[in-house]
Image (cartoon, rainbow, N blue to C red; front, side, top):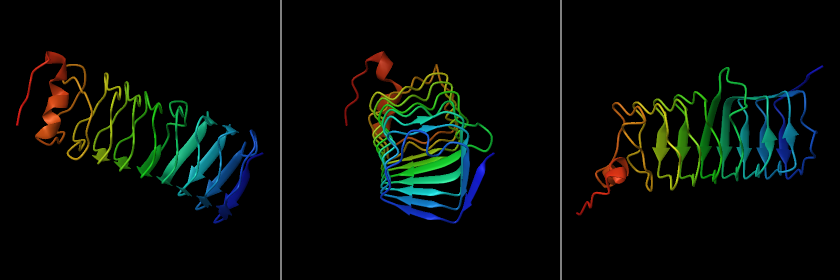
Length: 190
C-alpha cells in the first residue's frame, strides 16, 4: 500500500536504501538531503522541490517526477530513463548533472539553467522547447534526438550533428554554430 505525504518540509536528512519505496509526495520540500544511498521503487513526487540535495548514484527506477524542481543539487551519474514517462516534468537550476542519462524520455518544455551537463545522455530523447540556459554540454550525447525549438543560445561546448538529430527552429548563438558543424572539422574564426 502506497503511503501519501502532503505539504511537508525535510531538512538535512540522510536517507537509507529503501526508505522512500512505495511513497507518494505532493507539494513537499527537501533541503540539504542526501539521497545517494537510495534505491527508489514505486515513488511519486508531484510539485516537489529539492534544494541543495545530493542524488549522486541514486537508483531511481519506477519513479514519477511531475512538476519537480531541482535547485543547486548534485545529480551525478543518475539514470532517469527508467522513470515513469506519464507526465514526466522536471526542471534544473544551478545543478551538476554530469553523466546523467535521459535517453528515450519526452522532456518537452524542460528547463536547464546554469547546469554542468558533462557527458549527459540525450539519445532518442524528445527535447522539444527545452531551454538550455548557460549550460556546459561538453561531451553530451545527442543522437536521434528531437530538439525542435530548443534554445541553446547561451549554452556551450555542445556538438550536435544536424544530420542525426531534429533541430528545426532551435536557437543557437553565432558562437554556438561551431557545435553544429564540428564533424566537418571546419576552422571557424571570428
